[in-house]
Image (tube, rainbow, N blue to C red; front, side, top):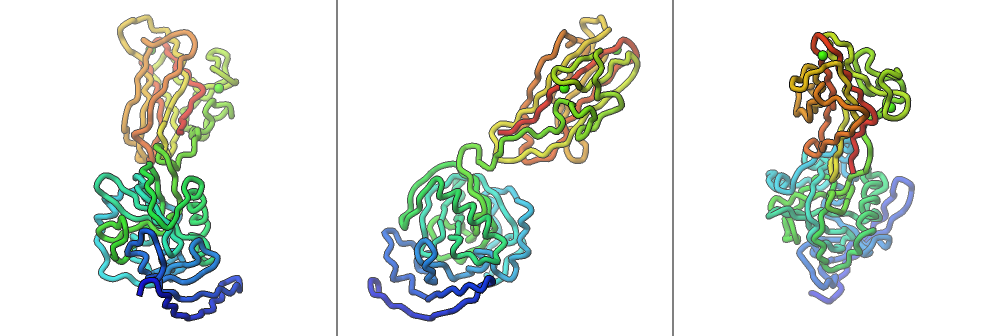
Length: 378
Ligand SMILES: [Ca+2]
Ligand SMILES: [Ca+2]
C-alpha cells in the first residue's frame, strides 16, 4: 500500500574485486515518493548509500552497466553513427537474458544526434534522458558510477558522461525540459516495455551512455587541423605522397612561408605531378575547411586555352574521385600566392584523400606552387 513502508530486507554481502564489501538491501520501490512517478519507478532497487538516490537498479543491471558475462564483447573501439529512427526500427528480441547481451545491438556503441527533450534522476540513480529526432524518440540512461561495478569496462566512460551532464544540468526526481541539441554515445540496450517515459516502441535504449555533448555542433568536435606537414617544412613529403621533385626549397619558386613548398610541374614537357594526403574527418563539427595557398606562373601566352592544369580532388578510401573541388590552369597565372578554401562538410565522418594533380602539355612550362595547406575542423 502506498505510503507504508513495506521493507523486505535481504542483506547481501558482496565481495567486490578489490575486496570491498558492499552492503545492500532490497526495497520495494513502489513505496518511494516521487512528484511525477512513472512506471520505471516501479522497478526494484537495491539500497546503496553511495549513490545519488541511495539506491541502484536490479533488472538487467549487469547488462546496463557492463558487468554481465558478455561485457568483454562490447566493441568499445568503434562507434556506429545512427539515428533514433534506425534504432527504433530494430526488431525487439523475444526475450531478454538477465546477464547476457543481445548481439550485435547490445555489443555495439552507437552515436546519435538528437534533441534532449527532458531528463530526470530515477529511483535507481540513473539519469533518464528522453532524446527525440522528429517523430522518433528513445531513452538514454547515464548510470550513477556508484552503481557500476569496478570491473566494468564502461566505468570510466560512464563517469565522464555523468560529469558532462552534471556540468550543464542538475537532474532531480522530477522531469525537467531541456530541448537542446545533443550528441549521445552509448551502448545499445533493449529494455522491457513497462511504460517508461520516452521509451522507443521496441524498448531500445542507449544504456549505458558513455559520452554526452551539448550544442548545435552536435558536440564531440575537437577543433583541430588534420593535415600533417601542412607547410612542407619537414623538407620531405610524408605524410603527403608526392611525385619526385615536388617538395622543394629552391629559390626559383619561393615558399609562401618557411623554407619549403610543393612545386608541381614547371618542366615545359608532357608531365604530371601529384600531391596527396589521406585524412579522416570527425563527425559533430560545424566547420570543415580545406585551404591552401597557390602560386601559378607560366610561359604560356594564350589568354584563352588551359594547356596546363591543376586539379584539386577529393578521393574515397578506394581512390575513386568523389569530387573535383577546383581546376586551375595557366590562365590563372599571377604574381604571389592566393588562398583558396573549400568546405569538406559533406565528408564528415569519412576517410578521404585530398589530391592535387598538375598536368602539363608538351611545351611551355606552368608551375603550380602550393604552401600552407590546412584541413581545419571546429
Ligand atoms: Ca612552407
Ligand atoms: Ca604548357
